[in-house]
Image 1 (cartoon, rainbow, N blue to C red):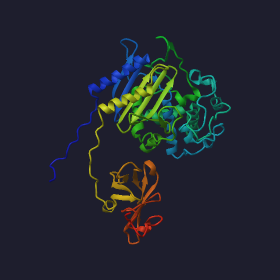
Image 2: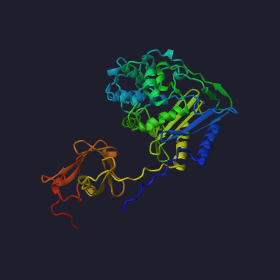
Image 3: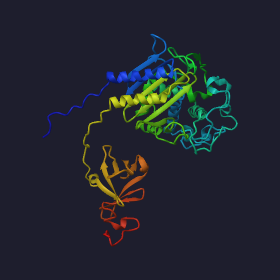
Length: 467
């Protein structure tokens, strides 16, 4: 019987539960106290909207809110990476291009753009002395001053070695290809479209001051706040928790005004593993990737003298977290951000989308569903809501993958072992399906049969037998 009315889905929770808010506030209170941080502000966004912010401070009666600026350090790199991906999407460069093609004359010109984005160009971690984070940028007026005489520590493409000069080069690449200063491209292509009017190159009131806290005494020392010059694309920006929640929402779903969802997903895709002994995760294109409590997080941490920051996004949970603090050290800001994501995701798990049938039944595709065998390994093929298919082992673990439809009737792998591989239906001369071909692997309806000619190497004519 057809129901007289459509079922109504439960309304999504827009605000956090009081118990969740208290757990978040308690966690940042412990972090501020144990980390001996002058002030700390944190915010949570869910499904693209900021739903909570909180702060702790050492000044009685004065707590920063989500509109107070802090310096965000290397989170700046993710903004620079977005500008580079925009150039890629516009066809102005390819990520496999050597830097020299678009920015000639540097000693790192042989490295590719992708290697610079993923910190695999083999460049040194820092520029030559003096310490660039605590000295004015005019001391390094040219790229040669940033790179030094011997910028390479490792062969390009071999290892992940975090490099601040590498992102200086990417900022200069944006300027060379776009024809405008990096700061102008950042403002017009990212900040203005996303409504991030409190993200700036230099601090604007209200903003926090940067402090160093003595490691053996409860006293503080003011840290300098320098304009980093050419190094700005690696760590210059000041921002707020509210603005970074907007940026986090973009990093989760994309925004056609800035970068499409597929390109943002490229940024979140692991390019390489990190250095041995470093944080547990990998690196994509301008984004750190980590796993915490079984949860995949993407984003970036940041630090400059006087400040630490983190931005984490859990795409699966629809939760993003920003943490900003004004101390040089003492606060494990990345771990704190991951804890805040976990608190929200576990206390208020995301509702799945309601199951809905496909808009139409495709008899030809339905005939392909069900069990298939790669040799004796049993797999199941099912249709997905996006007109693709999914292939997964029926028992145990194995090479599961999703596939999207291609124009020629085949499917292309989206993830796992078969990412980028082609799945084709092979038919006999009479049109009947013989088998599936997946990157040369043959999947048949029965183990090694019944079309023996389709199985590479043939099938023993005596067939299956006992001892």
